[in-house]
Length: 336
Length: 255
Image 1 (tube, chains in turn brown, cyan):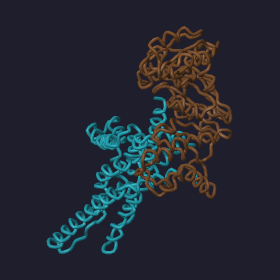
Image 2 (cartoon, one colour):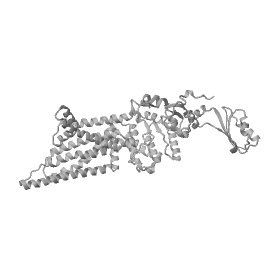
Image 3 (cartoon, helix red, strand yellow):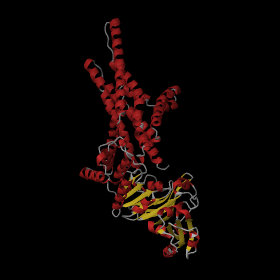
Image 4 (cartoon, chains in turn cyan, purple):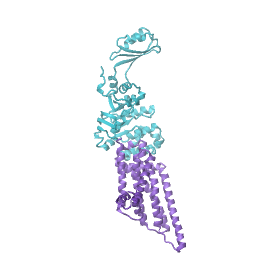
């Protein structure tokens, strides 16, 4: 449904996105993941025909974004970063305006409006001015706007920003329910969201795609070791040293007094049984032993912040820094 | 509804649910009414003086009331129309609905046309209300309707030009105050070209500069003179402004 080939966007000297290539199949939900300023919004703006790419081609539903923008626009539902609402209209008036603009009339319009009001929980505010609504409601009105003409393609720029936790879950469920019949691209910097909703993740940093795969496979291929968390109630002073002597253990990060340990072992080697035996035989009071799988968060940090060494909180600093992290999927280490 | 009509209806709705049209409309009608009152009373005073001196008075209402009124209308429109047009694009950009509009299945021509026509219709509505002045006056006196109708044609064309300049100014910025000021500036500049033209006198350059100002074209229509050259001036100036708006809006996508 969406096919992007080598698109580059330059603003003067600054390159916002650099030779980005990806595609989205029908019914697929793709997450665009990246720190602020990585080029997510720029890519989306090119796909929605808001701005043209400097180089490369973007095709949506078989239509070229540059050649036939109107055909593309008819088939896209787009939620920009800021919900595009007119503050002086009521929710009803706004949705009617949007529906008509997208060619809905009469009974089709009425049923589309009540469907969206229903599924986004706007019933209680439908006669109120949008200017008087909270951020969360405006965001939902923005989503209703993108969905009202039931487009085959949805492009959602951070769809859950400003919503409360319950609403976030509802919206994620909604997006999941759209998968299959709709192709969805959503951008986010909330990592669990990508894991929860998407079949495929594209990680973009400094304007380049640094990784593209399913959430599970991404974390698998970046894993160099198994991590195990261990908690002991009666850990002796030499517990750390003795754990290190176990076969296959690479590192032990211990915190003696509290009894928490983090062990790293060779990939593919499960040492949990050995640890358990050691702890039980010595009566160390084993109360917790678990394998920690690498989260998407770890993958993300590893890919986008490898050189800067910043934590997730300082995404902006990383984004403005050099894009010389991992420059292509090929350079990633294969799972051994 | 076609996309243009949909946009047009929404723009009109936005004006009527905000206080702007009521305030601007009230001030416009008040000032025009007051001006008409002043000119009518002034004419009455002159009539009484002439009666005392000559024993009879035959005053031309077309000259003394309506020509003055149409001349003064230029000032009023110069103030009022930029206020009406300033929000058209500037507000969309400020509230980030611009991106929404540009990614909706509606062409740029249609967007510019919808915006222009919405304010032009508001202006026509307000102008229509001033029609009460000649209608009331017709109950009590005699005057020639022809120059009044051509005068109204002139005001309509002048208003269309002012609105198109305002649309362009609004497309240039996301700040409404700046938009209003830019249209004031552009319109005053067009106005003053007439002065520059008469300074240059009857030279080819002077004639060109004078032609570029709307003053003499408007004046012809107010005096009851319908000349194709004047109509061509207004229509082509307006089309040029809307074309420039189209280019400006289109170019913001590339930045």
